[in-house]
Image 1: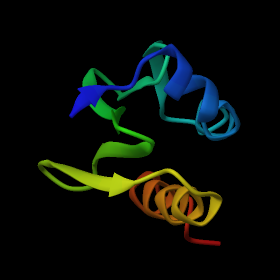
Image 2 (image 1 turned 180 degrees about the horizontal axis):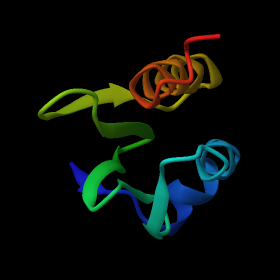
Image 3 (image 1 turned 30 degrees about the horizontal axis):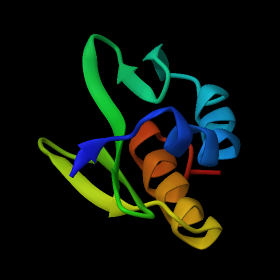
Length: 87
């Protein structure tokens, strides 16, 4: 499984835009996000399938990110880590 290339990241642009608006995350290069000084999120592609590697706890967890439903789940998990789920 390879890191997501430009075409895969183009397909994720809506999600990337939502991630860019999350306080606490910084995009070091396109599709690669840090939380503070630590890598937090990046993407992979495997054929037509897209995946996010996200640090939800100590280690990275790979989650599917191809569909809008999968992306919504990913955002909810990220928001929980960032403390945005508490309202």
